[in-house]
Image (cartoon, rainbow, N blue to C red; front, side, top):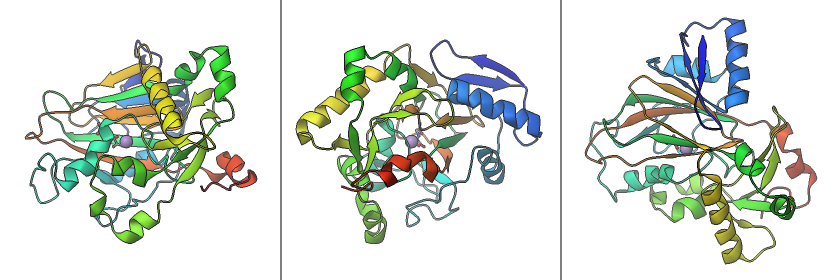
Length: 294
Ligand code: OGA
Ligand code: MN
């Protein structure tokens, strides 16, 4: 395989590889490169669900969908699309469209869970000719770029992540059952985290971050928004222009991502698998008082 790093602080494209046929050595090389670059893109792999699931398992166990009432096809593969399985295209403002529109704000997948995800794998099935890129921002480099005083001030802050808050700002929650929304209470995560595999220090926030524990709600919300805005700037942002069949895998522990808009009358169909985080990486939540709820 050939690895070509991007010109920004994260991301690399991997060529000369067939993700359906990986020997152990290549699998290890992929995971090592992923730790270094945080986002890997594999052009034109054209995997099906089964092959995507198998590839995703290189990184760990997979999450099952929280929203089975919406996406019932396969419990591990999340359909991220403006085309429903019956072929109809969503119209702007409809519940389904709003449900997915949250993807267009900087976020890290599943940060609203007690144990946030480790990685996400996204496969491009059908992409529009213009728009619909996905952007990735490097939260390791974003932390490194903060000045010493800021780092010290942010050091021990705990952030409340809340899906009902973040999705409530956009809409579409009515698609979920009461049981599904009840299963998503607010959770707490440190704003500054040490990456368990690389030891690098990272900022951890994004759109599900509601406010900072023990601080004024409005002020801390404004601070988190400003922090994200400043973090997601060049040279820390990689924009991937998709082609059908591409696969990308990113590290949710140190990368924020967002989708770019595209003409809504054009189909865009992507499939995502999500690799679950590990409980032992969240010992602070179990050990600390408050035990991860607020
Ligand atoms: C996702 C996501 C962005 C995109 O699937 O988690 O944020 O560009 N997708 O589709
Ligand atoms: Mn996402």
